[in-house]
Structures are given as C-alpha cells and as structure tokens.
Amino acid sequence: GNSVTQMEGPVTLSEEAFLTINCTYTATGYPSLFWYVQYPGEGLQLLLKATKADDKGSNKGFEATYRKETTSFHLEKGSVQVSDSAVYFCALSNDYKLSFGAGTTVTVRA
Amino acid sequence: GAGVSQSPSNKVTEKGKDVELRCDPISGHTALYWYRQSLGQGLEFLIYFQGNSAPDKSGLPSDRFSAERTGGSVSTLTIQRTQQEDSAVYLCASSLAGGFSYNEQFFGPGTRLTVL
Image 1 (cartoon, rainbow over the protein chains, first blue to last red):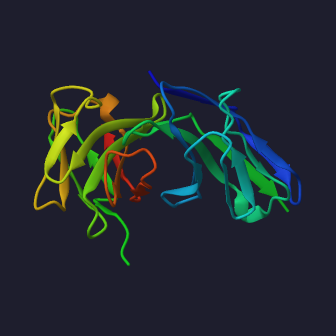
Image 2: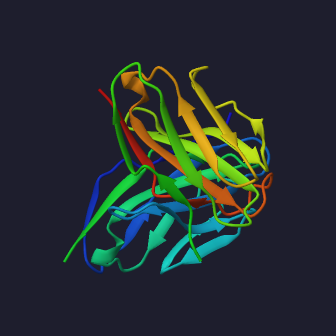
C-alpha cells in the first residue's frame, strides 16, 4: 500500500534561516504528491503539489521537486519567517484518497 | 466564497453515546471526504463520496461508524456507542470532482471529539 515518511520534528529555526523537510514515499503507479500546511488554530491548506516526475511545485517561497528515482518530495524554503510557523504534512494520492505523513512541526523564532 | 464548514467545532460526549458530525462542502463540489486526525494514528482516510454514493468506505474503523450524504451536498458522520479511542479531530474535505489524484481537496476546520 501507499505510505509517506517525513522527518520528525519539532524543528526550530531563526528567521531568515533555510528550511528543509524531508519526505519519501512508497506507492504503486504514479501518484500525485502534495505538501499541506496547518497554521495554529486553522485547518489544513494545500501549500503546493506536483503531479508527475520532475515537476516542481512552488508557493509562498516554498518549493518541492517530484523525484521518482529517489521517491522523494522534499520541501524547501530559502528564508523562513515567523509566519511560517506551522505543522507541515507531506501527502500522496493515486486516485482520490490522500495518504499523509506524520507531520513536522516548525517553529520560527524572531 | 464560503469554504468547507463543519459542526460542531467541539463535541464532548460520554462513552456509549451516539454522536453526529456534520459537513457542508463548498457549493458545486461533487466529491466529499472524511478523514480523522488522532495522536496515535496521524491523519487517516475514512470515506469518500461521489455525489450521494460512497464508493470507498474502506477507512471506516468499525461498524459503529457510518456516513451519509444527501442532495449531493451535506454529509453526516455518525458514530454509535462511542469509545474513548474514537477521540480525535474529524476532518471533512471536498473537491470539485473526484477520482483523480490531482484534484485539490479543500479541508474544513474539523470537529474535535472527546469521549469521556
């Protein structure tokens, strides 16, 4: 079956630091890959997605590249802000069902 | 426009009681999903609706859980004879269409269920 493994947190950074959250997956076929974000007190929001190999998803300064050869979809941001403090979830889907990683809590300090 | 809404936002119940959780999807979205977010299990898929039909109920953890959708819109998740392990945040999501992995799912704020 499908599974997603992402780096455990919590991760604490200073403002303007570089952020990487690793995500690897196991799936049959050619899944779509997603990063969702949950800000404090808010619901899950789609941050970015990629639907085929070598696609790069990007949004709000975040990027992730679909690497089929390493079955990875690592999330990166070059310069984080306090407002990026949130829980980040890597997810995949072959059809309609999302399979999520455990989530990584990121705290950015001013 | 309005997003996905869920009610109640919080529900505290006693073990053995039945509860109903409601989801109002985004207008025009034909696909609707229920997920559960718990400390021990993370985010888990429960059920998928396409219109009023549920072609995939594989994530429902036991026969105490059921869900329906009426008018291609509102959905209700019912948990009978609640147990403490049912305590979790129940999330509803909807998408414009279903069946394709690239369809964006829009999530509601969730219902936090606590079973005492």
